[in-house]
Length: 428
Image 1 (cartoon, rainbow, N blue to C red):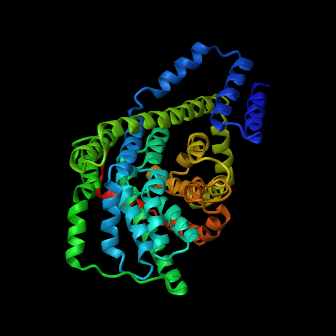
Image 2 (image 1 turned 120 degrees about the vertical axis):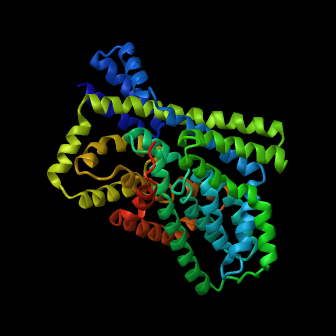
Image 3 (image 1 turned 90 degrees about the vertical axis):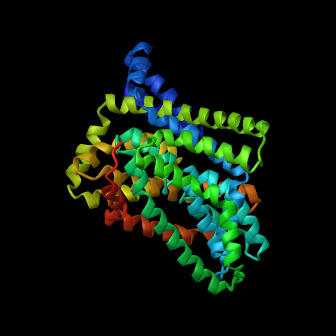
């Protein structure tokens, strides 16, 4: 009876377009009341569950660093350097979009931060350069998916919390897949640029490249400092969030002086608001997962999956298909916090490496951000530029096939993910 009420309440919230986070909290509360579980028991369980989850502290810090970078002049310098590097190619500004996203992804770990900050600048430049606005929006949405793949990565922080996988190894595991994504998209852009006769940029000369590099040097050092600090043992992956935020503030306020203390305060307030909503989702999902565990749903799913197949590659195929479908309709954070705890027992039972699985799943969910009808990146670039969503979707579809190809490549060639973690042998 209690389980039925729990499921029905949650489904009703979903069907009537209520907040999924609130739906998890309300449905779980209904379950507790029907089951006769006291508030004290719930609080004790949640306190124990969140004990030692210091990794979550990285999330608000990476969010703050992303906001400061978007406002504090750092994104402008990254764009100028990328433009000097590849802007001379046919379809150069689209290539700049990819390279800029690769660089920016090593600083923030957020796809939405990339699309709303650097992406908006790139869309305007592409439109001014003769590109159709829907194509420019599609390129910015697709390239923003690189953000949480190349370290640091907020989704990987969440996955590490859920699975116990080494966050340091997850970060390393995303480097090669992220570069593959960028290379594959640049290949597609080159083909489109020839077919549509997009303009060929002008080579600005080696001196201009050096000048752009010098201007962006301190910004480009961000991923070097973060990854160097993590893998040299100077600070933990969690503490890297604090290092990123502090470094971004120093650059924006003291070095570039594009942001004053008042502006910094506004970004801190906005960060608290964003993280407050995210924390509510995490708390709701944790309570929801408590019911899943209490009712043995995860174990039943694991038993059912293992009875269907004992081949880890078949399981990965099924999970990829499942997440690609769910990504069309559900928010990335809900997928991660609700669905992943249900399937982790099956993944462990078949001996799938959690670092490999984590990178595959994060890429899968990034594809979901560009997949209609729910893709948040599509809504972001469409809303910011006032471009009809249908036109953006039409242009982004080929990029989705490119990303899905990379997804299945890293799924069935685990070495692409595990090479660097095995090489470094990082422990966290």
